[in-house]
Image (cartoon, rainbow, N blue to C red; front, side, top):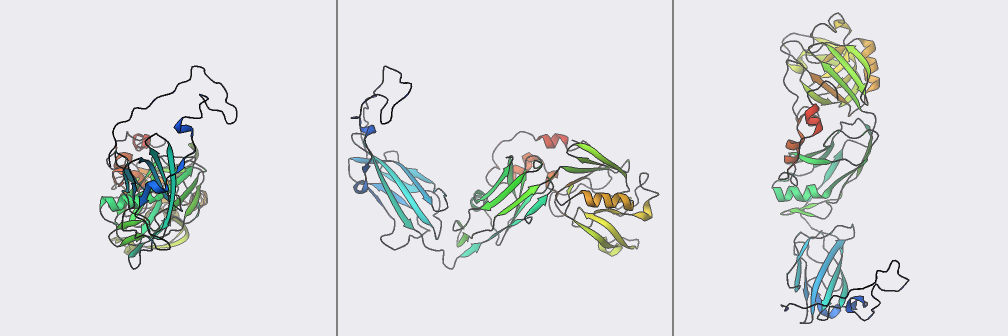
Length: 414
C-alpha cells in the first residue's frame, strides 16, 4: 500500500508560554488531530501471531501490517517479559513492520503498534502472544567466573559456554546477551579466547572498591541452527585496593604498591638461565600455604624436591611467589630459581597475607619469554586494548585510540 505525499499545516504560537496550567496546550487548540486521544487501531493492524492459546514458532519472524487505505504504521515496539527489545524494520510507506532478529523461545511478548490515519490522528494497538519452547534443540549454557567474592583490580570476568559457538553472527548474538556493569562505570569489552570461552576486562584495570555485576539475557535466544540459549546464574563480585608487585629481574628486587604508593621493597631471586621468569603482567590465581615442588613438575634436568611455604600462584605452569630460605644469600644479588620469585620466609609470609586473587604481579627485565595472554593463567593485561577489541564479535571493526595502560606497560610503576 502506498500513500501520496501529504501537506501538513504547522501551527505556531506567537506568544512564549513560560508555564502551562493543568490540561492546557501550548497553542490553546484542542481541535488539532495530534492533541486528540489515540484511537483504537484494532481494525487497522494485523499480525501473524498465534490465535487464542496457541504459541508462536520462535523460528518464524514477527510481522505487523497496516489494514485499509486510511492508516499507516508509524512505530512498532516489541519486548518480552525480560525487557528485551525485538529488533525490526518498518517499510518506508508504513504498510509493514517485520522483525529482523530471532524471537526468544518460551517468552511472552508485548507488541505496541502506533498508527496514523489520513488526517494525522494517532492510533494505538497493543498485541500480546507467547512463543513455544525450543523443544529438543540444544541449549547453550553460560557459567560465569570467578566465584562471588572480593578480588584484585586485575581479575577478568570469564564466561564458559557449554557448546562451541562459531561464526561472527552467532558470537555477536551471545556477546550481545552478556552484560557486565560496574560501579564506578568503566569501558570494557569481551574477547573470544576460543569457541567456548570469553574473557571480559576493562580498558584499564577495574577501579578500586568497585562492584561488578555480570548477567546473561541469553535464555530463549536463538544462537544458531538448533542451538538456543539457556538461563544463567548471575555473578556479583567486588574489588579491593590496587595491589601491584613489580619485580625487576635484573636488579633482583620487588617493589609492592598499594593504590600507587610504595608499601614494601623486597630482595628476591628469579629464574636462572634456562628457567628465566616470564616477563609481563600476571594475575594472582590463588594462594597455598604449602606446595610440594619437584623437578618433574616442570621437566627440569637438575633434580629437586622441596616443600615450599607461603606460595602465591601466578601461572598455571607453576610460577609462584614463595618462601625460599635456601637462597637467601642470592636474594637481591643473583637469579637462582627455576622460574619462581623467591624471597625469605618473613617477606613471603607478608606477601602471602597482603595479596588476594586478582592482584597484579609484573616482571620486567627478565631474559625469559613474555607472559602469553591466554593459556597459562591470566595474562589478559599483556594484550593492547586495540588488539583486545578485535577479539570482540561486536567491536572488531570499530576504531579505538591507544590505552593509557599500553603506554605504561613497560614502566616499572604507574
